[in-house]
Length: 257
Image (cartoon, rainbow, N blue to C red; front, side, top):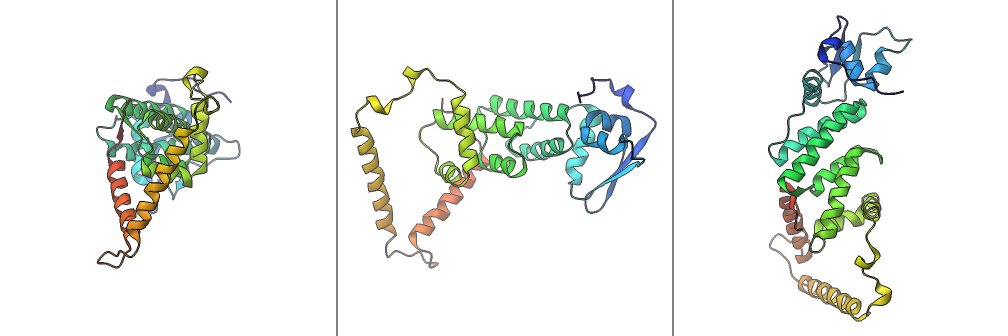
């Protein structure tokens, strides 16, 4: 079924109201039925079905804070742009609600707000944001596609692989596949892509030996050494890495291209 055509707000403020009860406390939101159903396919199926005569519906598992932002968007048709990176948390929560309730216009508005944020700040999505979206959306999610396309460019043009991204890609096969599929769509000119069949194998051997040497040094440093708290050296380094990763995630990665 096609999406309803856009209509001005005053045409959607019908006299019939519906009550939506949100969260564990059951906060009641009284909303114009026509406005809610015009925007949301999910609620059209609930209130406009032939068998339904209800004027109330419960959403006990939803966040009252996120639903309040949804109501704000319904009546204003406006998504406040993020002013700093932490504001993306609220916007992504609202996005997940838009996907669940099948609100196409809101999905598009948030996608544009997120795209513009990363463009204007010259930053990339951090790992924490990507993992959150992957954990709460399906394979076809537009937000997944936007974030993974940004990450693919960051990794391809960056200087090496950040350690926390390497660990994440090893652990999350779907994210790795999505990045490869994204890169394939770029259709590089063949002459711009290295061809190992035509080049010397010596650089490959040298790079492998360098990695082996680094690994041996790291393993050697960890033998027999203990930190005051009884944690061995290798675990201590990993903890520091996680701390560094958190710092990197709190500030988005800068474009090095």
